[in-house]
Image (cartoon, rainbow, N blue to C red):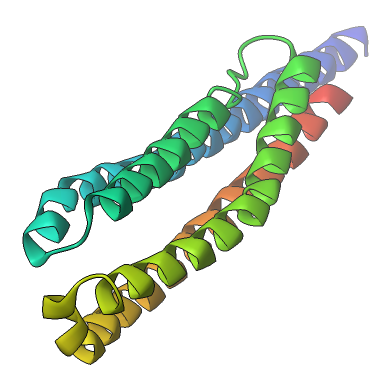
Length: 182
């Protein structure tokens, strides 16, 4: 009888170890997903910076190009700053949960800066193209139409990426909570 009880205890302990390993692997998967999804805005920022010489060739003013570059560099810098809050699950679970919660909050609040900055940039884009540049001003409708399509596609992709980041951080928080309960 004692031997059977010991076998049952050993079996239960091995299942608990396997469950812990599965949860940690799922956490690592979500952390890797967060790291990849958080890198997308930085890559898009580099692509935007690479387009600045093209905007100069089209005829946009230097002040508009400087504002565009500063806006992109600010967004990239903030994204890289926030990315440092993605934790390692190998360590303390309480600090990992705090880091994920901070990462999620900053990502949630980021839209409060991003949308107004985008609206100001669009206004400056139209103003610079229409008022200060007579060559572009004559062809403003095709330029604004093309920029509008690019804006809508970029906005949709950015919001999808943001939703994926928030969903992955929520999953990670729930998995860390499950690990903490054990």
